[in-house]
Amino acid sequence: MSFDLGPALLFCPADRPDRYATALQRADAVILDLEDAVAPSRRAAARGALIDAELDPARVIVRVNPVGTPDFEADLATLSQTDLRLVMVAKAESPKRIARIDPRFSVIALCETARGVVACEKIAALDNVTALMWGADDLVASLGGTASRRPGAGAGYRDVARYARARVLLAAGARRIAAIDAVHLDIADERGLRAEAEDAAASGFAASACIHPRQVETIRAAYRPDDETVRWARGVLAAAESEGGVFAFEGRMIDEPLLRQARTALARAAR
Image (cartoon, rainbow, N blue to C red):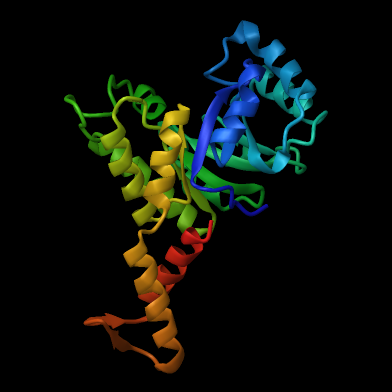
């Protein structure tokens, strides 16, 4: 299963079916969360809500609990009674266990622990894995740390989180599958979210996850090429049709990597 859901993926607690429709209206796709967003005592009710809901399976991801837990088994048993087939596996760490997941399901592996990040290359190579995502705060917690970001308003990630982000992106890219950037938890920090999403788009992430509807349009705008970029991309690709090999366009040397970037820009503009 290829990953082409759009750039803004909105988390929604699975035990809040009253929010399902609104979340789907606001975002490109929705991640219905059966893990951290739902108290253990509410997970049975959340599973029941998923069975009863009328959802477009093409635009829904379900975050399930970690492989090997009783909750994971219950999550997949529930989803087997629905048409939902794209699961995000929380705290993905074991390639062997992920490879044994029911083949009816496509997997987004959430590499958000030290073990998961270290194993991300092997996880990305699995046939049932369609995308990788990373998470900063669970990662730092797994290391015994206390904060994924440096202190101060608008501060960025600590080095270990930046390393994990890059490693997951490279692992996904090496296997030609999608990479999803982590959530920006400070809902009020629109400027920080915009900078992070712009960097994600420029670096090669396919999408960014978010936790609030007000973050959706900021992410979409970050992934959407501006008019000047679209003009340049169309022009350079038109010029390439009559040029052979390396050529100059508007003062820049153009070769295949830049042509690929131009194709990516136009593909994003067409969403």
